[in-house]
Amino acid sequence: MPGKLTDAVKSARSTILIRESNERKRAFEAWYDGKTVNVLTEDTEEVDGRLYTVGYTPEYVKVFMPETDSGKITEILCFDAGCVIIGR
Image (cartoon, rainbow, N blue to C red; front, top):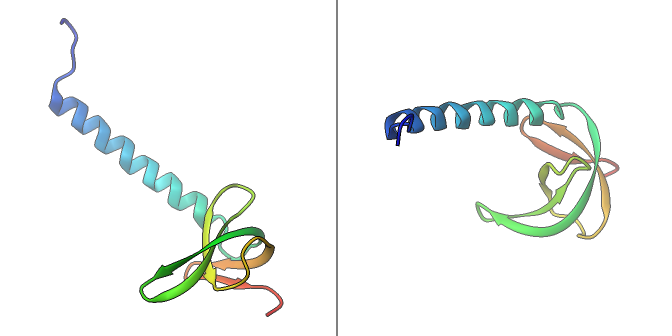
């Protein structure tokens, strides 16, 4: 088929798109650094042998925080190393 892209071109374009997507994701998440946001807690997950409550911000950013009750809206302070629950 005329004008068909080679696998090498497809692979190179895919690599560029993945890199740009990852950079935008990091920039979007970095926006939360130092901000206080509400998180709807939904579940508990174990990571490296520790239990964390998992929730989502209003913009659907997944957040892991020290274990707390699920199903609540919790106010947290975000920073590069993690999140702190406000009022604890």
